[in-house]
Amino acid sequence: MELGLLPVLILCLSASISSAELAAKVGVNYGQLGNNLPPPSQSVKLIQSLNAKRVKLYDANPKILATLRNTDLQVSIMVPNELISNISSNQTLADQWVRTNVVPFYPGTLIRYLLVGNEILSQPNKQIWFNLVPAMRKIKAALKTHRITKVKVGTPLAMDVLESSFPPSNGTFRSDISGSVIKPMLKFINKTKSFFFVDLYTYFPWSSDPTHIDLGYALLESKNITVTDPASGLTYHNLFDQMVDALIFAMKRLGYPDTRIWIAETGWPSGGDYDQIGANIRNAATYNRNVVKKFNAKPPVGTPARPGAVLPSFVFALFNENTKPGPSTERNFGFLYPNGSNVYPIDLSGKTPESEYAPLPVATNNKPYKGPIWCMVAKGANQSAVASALSYACSQGNKTCDPIQPGGRCFKPDSLAWHASYAFSAYWSQFRKAGGSCYFGGLATQTIKDPSYGSCKFPGAKL
Ligand SMILES: *[C@@H]1O[C@H](CO)[C@@H](O)[C@H](O)[C@H]1NC(C)=O
Ligand SMILES: *[C@@H]1O[C@H](CO)[C@@H](O)[C@H](O)[C@H]1NC(C)=O
Ligand SMILES: *[C@@H]1O[C@H](CO)[C@@H](O)[C@H](O)[C@H]1NC(C)=O
Ligand SMILES: *[C@@H]1O[C@H](CO)[C@@H](O)[C@H](O)[C@H]1NC(C)=O
Ligand SMILES: *[C@@H]1O[C@H](CO)[C@@H](O)[C@H](O)[C@H]1NC(C)=O
Ligand SMILES: *[C@@H]1O[C@H](CO)[C@@H](O)[C@H](O)[C@H]1NC(C)=O
Ligand SMILES: *[C@@H]1O[C@H](CO)[C@@H](O)[C@H](O)[C@H]1NC(C)=O
Ligand SMILES: *[C@@H]1O[C@H](CO)[C@@H](O)[C@H](O)[C@H]1NC(C)=O
Image 1 (cartoon, rainbow, N blue to C red):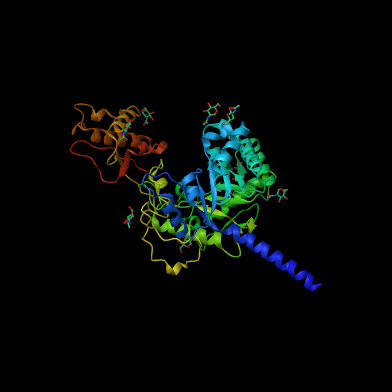
Image 2: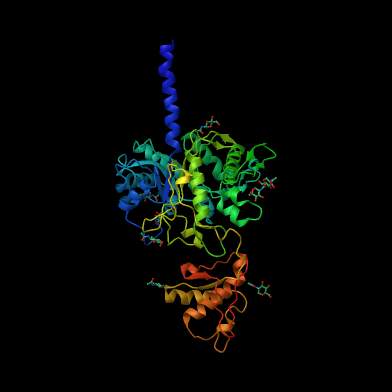
């Protein structure tokens, strides 16, 4: 009897260990929104040098998928947002997408996850929200048609799918998607044994409310802060766990308490604009090393609502991507510069002990910068694009461009760059508080050096 039991025991044990190990491996997001990134062959070597075991693409780039062939990297590919509406009502198109983008590379390339769109439920166009789950079903059916069984179908969503996340036990999906989109999605995920893929950043809630949220709590660094959820009685030591559990409670509210979660993106920017608090190398290295340690922990630590659960993940991101729109932080999430050197060292296997890393630079922007900040034309900006942005800025706000009219205090020097810098600063100083940005499609950049000259005073934005 003992002899008979033993192999069964060993089998169970090794099965559970290997599935835990399989899932715990940390992957990396390989975004390509840069005009200076290395070719796939070099990028794949860099991914391996970070000890990533998985890689997530934002498309199904055939060159990259061919390069990944015969590596041991597991791969996640993505159906572009633009195709979702058509795929949702056309099985032939779904079949065709799988035939073109998966079949030529499978199984040589270890494609394991097929994500349908990116953060679709954060898009202003609501029509596409309701096409999302039908498109996921069609893609799943197309994989089945092609006898591809190892690929999980999902879709990465941002945390704005929740309308309430605090305390975590009050986690609730937005009412405009809860019944119509999320519930059928959870049913699909359950039926297909897939995952709820979520993009989760403690950086955003912390940076929008740094006085009430402790930085160490957001960086998974705090030793002394505990937040107790009065309804569940669960105790939190970091913001990451709190956010994951809010999602778990929201799913529970819809009748799917056991849906597995996959962290599709998480990270912290290593640089940003003057008005972006806490974006620095010290915080980025600290957050990412801490979260990677958590993901790799053996046995898995999970979260207060799911102690011991494995949290599979893709951290964000491989490279700094210089053509990403938005505030400067968006272009500074990478572990690597485009030339392949480290922004800061990181080991995604979590095996490098803290003590082996060189000291990190001191953080100088962990407190809000109060201003003033001016918004100037960026070096090398396209002249005709600057001219259009100038007329746009002048058409906004109150008397925005009066001083740069002929005879005005800021008319001279009479150059496009000077006038546009004035207009950008005057625009931004009026609209910053309402969410206006100093970006103008990459034509503008912030400065804290007062550009005012003679009797011409540039308006500066204050926080
Ligand atoms: C979607 O289908 C319509 C009608 O067949 C077509 O005109 C359109 O180009 C398609 N959209 C995309 C993004 O392929
Ligand atoms: C469905 O997609 C196929 C393949 O792209 C296309 O030929 C066909 O016209 C589409 N059907 C409809 C109804 O749009
Ligand atoms: C719980 O969430 C609801 C919205 O879903 C919100 O109205 C309510 O204020 C939240 N409760 C607490 C205690 O924050
Ligand atoms: C699917 O839902 C059932 C019922 O809630 C649950 O027992 C099961 O664990 C779920 N399966 C997955 C893969 O989430
Ligand atoms: C936690 O410790 C830090 C550093 O010692 C200190 O600044 C902070 O006030 C403490 N917070 C609490 C809630 O005790
Ligand atoms: C790579 O680029 C970074 C950022 O531009 C720079 O600081 C670093 O010196 C470069 N490294 C090499 C080896 O060229
Ligand atoms: C400059 O911007 C204009 C539109 O504003 C565009 O048509 C043109 O292609 C751009 N030139 C370069 C070199 O990017
Ligand atoms: C423009 O002036 C009006 C009236 O003084 C004021 O209500 C409005 O807020 C101003 N707009 C901006 C962008 O400052």
